[in-house]
Amino acid sequence: MKNKTKLPNIYLGIITFIMYVPIILTVVYSFNTSRITSIWGGFTLDWYKVLFQDHDIGIALRNSLILAVISCFLAAVIGTLGAYGMAKIKTKPNQIIGYLSILPIMIPEIILGMVFLAVFSFIGLPFGLTTLIIAHTTFCIPYVLLNVKARLVGMNRSLEEAALDLGASKIRTFFDITLPLISPAIWSGVLLSFAMSFDDVVISIFVTGPQVNTLPIKIYTKMKTGVTPEINALATVMLLATIILIFASYQVGKVGNHKKISKGE
Image 1 (cartoon, one colour):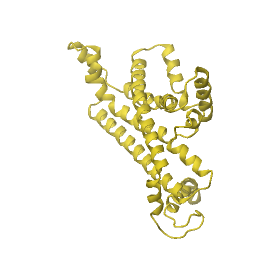
Image 2 (cartoon, helix red, strand yellow):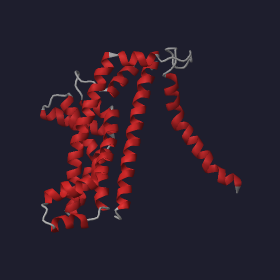
Image 3 (tube, helix red, strand yellow):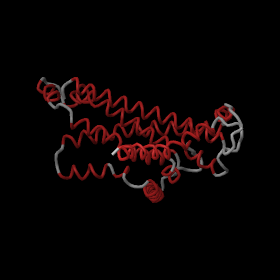
Image 4 (spheres, one colour):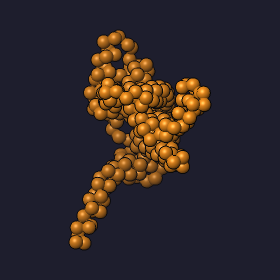
């Protein structure tokens, strides 16, 4: 019986080792003096200095931030309005629309990228920041929509009804009652969307132009000449940023749940 109880812990340990050891090694070798990542030559911060002085990396970072911010803003507006509309309309087509709305996160990225490439080529839209924004907004919308939809399902409808009974218009009720209640879900979805947009490489390769590089694409092109400590340093910075965003998303969602419990919903 004792051996059986240890099996889950052994299995968890193996899975954890396989998943996180490569990430830990990437972080460790970003401080490596030697350019050869398989040989430890000593501790240094020089590669981070080289990274922050790289002009091309700076431009790619700026493009990624602009792309992620605009895409997340559009996804927040479209996803919130979509979730609110589906919560108000209870019909069978509404369910079909709901399933279709989450397809972008279910379809493999390479297929989605090829679809965007075909569509943009067909309509003659020049590849660049505009096509990137359209593509990233499309796969970011479901993250906001699902979060807001789940929040609306558990929301106390009596608050909206009370506002309407007191003479408030539907628009005033939405901005004064509904929006503050679902704002944690919106922010949670936006932060997740930002992380997904900032890290995306597969779809971006299909829809970007020669004049626009994002940070993940820059990493991909640099890796063709071999992995260097500079790439490891860049991957470490991106990993840290992603962890911060995911943690912030979790904290925002937890705040929303605490508010929900405190109001007795």
